[in-house]
Image (cartoon, rainbow, N blue to C red):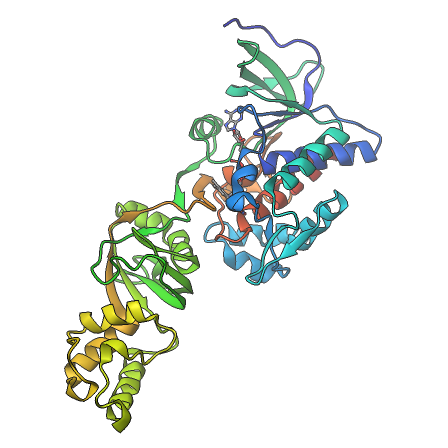
Length: 437
Ligand SMILES: Cc1cc2nc3c(=O)[nH]c(=O)nc-3n(C[C@H](O)[C@H](O)[C@H](O)COP(=O)(O)OP(=O)(O)OC[C@H]3O[C@@H](n4cnc5c(N)ncnc54)[C@H](O)[C@@H]3O)c2cc1C
């Protein structure tokens, strides 16, 4: 490998990271500058051979672009980290703007029953192609197979502004290169190496840890029940107090039993809110499941007592007679067994103590999380650049003038459902708007 000094004029804007945030920022920047007849030289630098890699694999290959939630005050509630900082940005670019942007760029989105929005083609390539085409149209230059290795602040010749000198590895050309730029946008997602470079520039990095994962459990009540789902169920992490763990609030939604434990929206939401707390405990924690949200142990107990007292139920076997129809029979059998009720017993023979235990199993079953699994449709990390070090009107660093951030590189992450891409679109659009002016 050889090193060369930077040649030629500095770039106006260099974007490191050809993901959704970087593309959106670069396109917006070039579009604004072109519209004002003051074109800028905008370069995206991407380490992989193919840009927009995560877009292509997102949402199970369908790309869950955004969520049909058009009220900023409501939208922020879907971000376990970063919601408050996004409040202002969402008043400037929110899901309805995302829908319009893609529509203008030839992509129609559709809304599914749960609010998730996908391209009507159900193909993630449609989204990636639209971004690539818009970048090409606006004259954005893309270098792939090029990795950022180093950043230095630079006083640009004949310019009162400060710029940046970047050290790059250009894999296809088998050499290292230096180039300079007036302004720099970092949109490298959760890359740890770039995180270190950001810290060396004077920023605080919150340690990245996974969010949006499934739970591994090895519990006899759930063995061989893979595929059984309850909708809705409610989950809560067991902690001493809310002060110890802010994620003790229950999360409600469809819950799916898997070969390894639990998945489905309720589990994923809980994993997001409890991401850091669970990480600190090595993904071992107590879990409380209410299979009948809306019912307390007392109210479930009353219903069970009433059902037991009915003459027509007296000779029925509890294991085969589901009292609450939302509980699938296979799960019901396990909960009845866990309550100590034998298969041969009739309702009339079930003691008050066993009935109470069944009510507890149904509404406050205690389980043990033993590890984390992977959710293949969406995955994100929490952590990144500390938010109060960034001006969320422009996405410019408050510490290093001329340095901007967008997307997952920031300490922002959302629940599953299109909220993570919306963060990329919104912060990318704001950064691009500031850079293109
Ligand atoms: C399997 C999966 C499915 C997902 N599905 C969804 C979904 O359906 N909906 C949703 O909202 N979210 C989804 N997400 C989350 C979403 O993909 C991310 O939140 C989003 O991609 C973040 O965008 P970004 O541009 O900030 O970062 P990224 O998409 O991570 O892009 C960063 C880019 O920077 C490049 N890079 C890193 N370091 C360097 C370097 N040193 N030099 C040059 N380039 C570098 C990387 O190669 C990468 O291309 C999914 C994530 C995964 C992993």
